[in-house]
Image 1 (cartoon, rainbow, N blue to C red):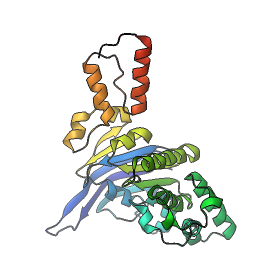
Image 2 (cartoon, rainbow, N blue to C red; image 1 turned 60 degrees about the vertical axis):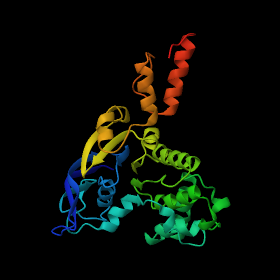
Image 3 (cartoon, helix red, strand yellow; image 1 turned 30 degrees about the horizontal axis):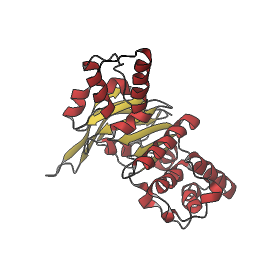
Image 4 (cartoon, rainbow, N blue to C red; image 1 turned 90 degrees about the vertical axis):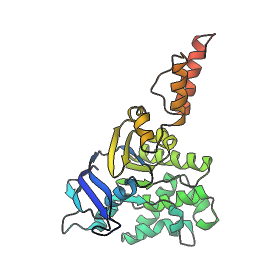
Length: 289
């Protein structure tokens, strides 16, 4: 399912002393099955942008076309749009409220008017997709879980509605490194196994480098970079000028290259760096750093 954004502008508190242009003539095309990372400093417009994609916010001007339909036109049912575009807010575990995990995940499908058999099927499938065993976890209280497990339950609640597009706003915020890696791993599996279009909002370059196929960088309501991670992370000066940075390993690789090591420039994860360095060591007994 593709998304086409045309000349989107959103102004908060227009014609007041507190007027702020959050989106400034944004145009983007997001293709079916892509794993996109949307990154930017606080206030860059990334969260405002994603809230337009399922109709939570309406722009001052512009179009949002999902599956060839302009969702801003009169007569378009936003409830139908939200079945296709699932949005997981930052700290979604704060929205858990049912007494058991099964009931919490079933809440969304129930509101779609599905029968009990279909709801159960979706709950089981969603729990499996986020790495939670149904029999082990179904009757547990979501409030007895770790932070990472709560996050999984909250994501499963959206996944159970079976959207074609899954948007996640800072899904690893506040988690420890183990919890972050687990959530990112599950999101990557979702993308791989179910060919969902995934839009991951983040300011963590390390997270983005691990999972995304395409990176869009926002600053002051505009998209300033758009491309594959290896292309975007080369633009270190541009990233630093807008309060971001390339993944830390990118700086290490740059320093090693400056010192004469023949290591590929297009490295942006620790595993890539590890493999490249081991390869160099294996091919030469005396490596001068």
